[in-house]
Image 1 (cartoon, rainbow over the protein chains, first blue to last red):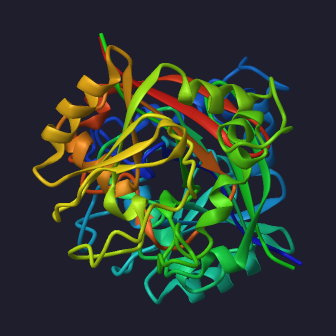
Image 2: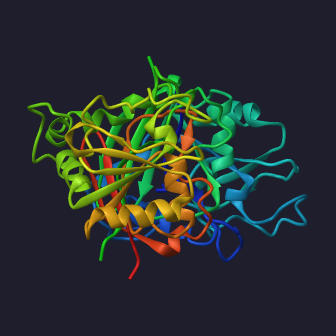
Image 3: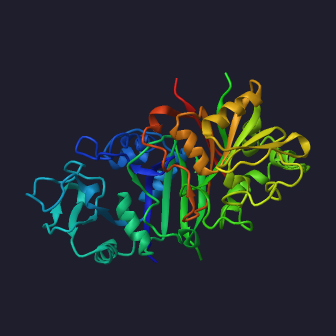
Amino acid sequence: MSKLRVSNFTISLDGYGAGPDQSTENPLGVGGEELHDWFVGTRTFRETHGMEGGEQDSIDDKFARGGFDNIGAWIMGRNMFGPVRGPWPDESWRGWWGDDPPFHGAVFVLTHHPRAPLPMDGGTTFHFVDNGIESALDRAFEAAEGKDVLVGGGASTIQQYLRAGLIDEMHLAIVPKLLGSGERLFENVGTGLFEDYECADFVASQSALHARLVRRG
Amino acid sequence: MSKLRVSNFTISLDGYGAGPDQSTENPLGVGGEELHDWFVGTRTFRETHGMEGGEQDSIDDKFARGGFDNIGAWIMGRNMFGPVRGPWPDESWRGWWGDDPPFHGAVFVLTHHPRAPLPMDGGTTFHFVDNGIESALDRAFEAAEGKDVLVGGGASTIQQYLRAGLIDEMHLAIVPKLLGSGERLFENVGTGLFEDYECADFVASQSALHARLVRRG
């Protein structure tokens, strides 16, 4: 069975997945970039972003790599795709990731505003879905052809899928850093998550605690 | 210099220091007792509660033990002391801990309602402070005679001392468990904590991630 997964989603010790005041200069909000210090040093991150080197076989790399494993399509919120809000003024914004984004497959971007599909180099195509999270999920599972679908983020997109009871597995990284404000992950998700998930992995490197939550039996 | 410390304070993966519906049956709220699974198995916990055995020299025991080290007096919120709310109807509630509480020193209980000091076996005396957190802190430092003062909890008491900028060091345990609701630790603490604290320790056992936050330079 294909799964809907969250992976490599990083939160601060105080629970924030992004800092305050997200902008073009600070896509993850003030201080938010540092959440991913554990991630950018891994071989997996570097490979998926077209770079050489990086640590491998470490705890961090193991989880980073597992997060990309068997992923056939992606879903993300519009704010993860870019800083543009409201109707698309033109087609000029093409994501944060340059011409060859690290997805190499279909990416479904949740938005209230229609936009034509945007093919990129390296096999990535951004599809803009304006009729809800279930529709995006159906299309993503179809595109994934039996593989899993990854909800990349941000926090509010993950919250929507959690509220709808649609997420099968969630790998979180908690890092030794306070953000103080921003977008909290565990908010607006109802009160019953503890009944739905158990913690299957709980392992820390010096840079991140990796917790993998899986849906109970 | 004596410090004001928090130690062995445990939160769920989703950030709660207690579950919902705290009561006499569930002092830490529904599901909240399990937060301390990592703690009750340690030799330190067992020793301080008059029991033998328990694991020692483990990561968990090392942090548990460090949390009691050099503590000369305690501060706690009234809800940590007991389930009674409003004016004290009588003197019958004497804490959750039996005749010989594990504090063995002066404990200052924050309350809005006066009550006479309550001496217990084993050197513990509960003092009820109805004129504010600074007053409790002054009295606790005096009683500690050069040692540190521990803010035991709960979450809202820690929040008050954090907001006032009075906490020097905070050891948190994060456990592989969701609570879904209850009392969140990192709430109502302002947005500037990240400027005030850095993470000095970040180590996990299979049961808990231990993070020690210390005031910067």
